[in-house]
Every structure is written in C-alpha cells, then in structure tokens.
Image 1 (cartoon, rainbow, N blue to C red):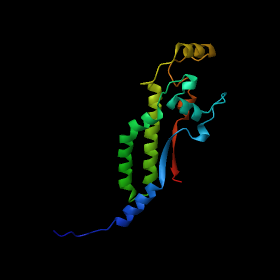
Image 2 (cartoon, rainbow, N blue to C red):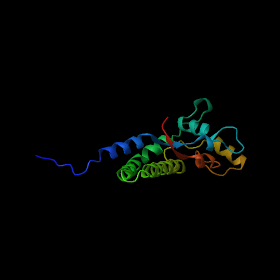
Image 3 (cartoon, one colour):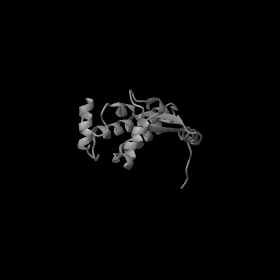
Length: 159
C-alpha cells in the first residue's frame, strides 16, 4: 500500500498543541473576588470550608466546586476539541475554546450551589440565626449570594 502526502500540517499541529499546552483554565474564587462585604472571612476561605467541611466548627462538607467541574468535564472536553480543530487555521480559537470551557464549568459549579443537591441541610440553629440576622433563605451555601457570585474562571499561562 502506498501513501501520498498531499499537504504536511505537522508543524501547524505541533505549534497549536504547544500553544494549547501553555495555558490552563482555573475555576473557583480568584483573589480579586475573594473579599466579602462586611465580613472578615474571604469567599475563598468560606468556599474551602464548605467544600471540605470543618469538624471543629461543626460544619459538614458540602462539596460544590469539584463535583461541579467534574459534571461539566465531558461538555468542556467536547468544546475544547471543537476549538482545537479550528485553531490550526485560526490560533485565537485556542483562547476562545478555553474561555468557552471556563464558562461551562463556572455555570455548572453555580448550578450545583443553587440546586443544593446532595448537601447536608442546614441545622435548625443555623436557620434560626439566619432569621435573627434578617436573612430569609434556608438553602445551604446561600445567605447573601456573595460566595455564589464570586465563582468564576480565569485563563492563565502555566507557570
């Protein structure tokens, strides 16, 4: 069997793969979104506590970040694959693909928080404390909306 090469795109493929490998998408709470109004604890710290729980403070783990990203992974992979194919001819599609994947994962994490699926319910004492402070909701992880609104994504060069 003979093979005839009509066009060698090896260099373009390697260049595109190298450019894609230089960047990554991070999902979570970046430093610029970490501060909370009227609260000494940051959104990043609060997110960590809720993701992992705090036995010392009697707070159960309510994982939202890792499961939210994992749930979005297949869709993100499909989008990245689509943009990777077009990036050979249009290198800016690398960033477009990374941003699209970031937005998909960010949305998935936020949906997980809003749904509260699988979270331990709030204790009666927590609900009572919320009412005393003027907060109305009874959903775990949502009192002021600051944590929810701090969830985002960034595309960064790998260090």
